[in-house]
Length: 230
Image (tube, rainbow, N blue to C red):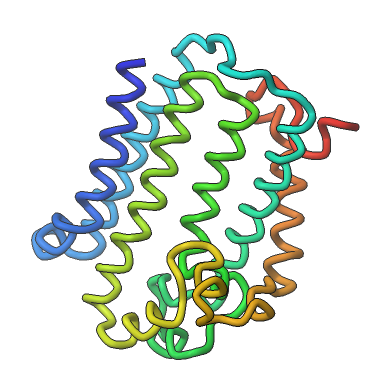
């Protein structure tokens, strides 16, 4: 367990450091391509160490009983995570692509009317889904680090994008919400706008079905999603 915690701390810590305070000086010294190569190497090295450590930790006993009720909740949470993830790839001003300022000027629709960080919240929901049905110490530690990286990283992304995009991002922030459905609760965004588009619903459903079907193929010791009941 100490090795797992250390590896995950290195993965999360280097990710934050190279995404924020170290990014600019490293790009100056290594160039954009060199920085991306270093970033990729460090990310895969620390993630690989975490995977090796995770597999070596004894599974242990679950901290609470897991029945069909929790499995059903976990399945729905995982579907929501898949929809948010797929929706985040289309018209997302946070992605490093041309036209981000133009996208930020558009009304918040689909998953972005739910939260301006749908990708990050999909990772947090993935973590919650797995803790619910696999409440064992190594799983809880892994999922806690993933959720921390996603949600704290989303807040850090707001600061970074505001520095890069200026008023365009600050205007996007003022019209959207960090928290899911925060815009609807505050009255800034109508509830009807928070309907995921067909690409998010259809793509998310396909990814959810395939990922849960392939769960045993990934080394898990149980079926997941609706396949648990087939």
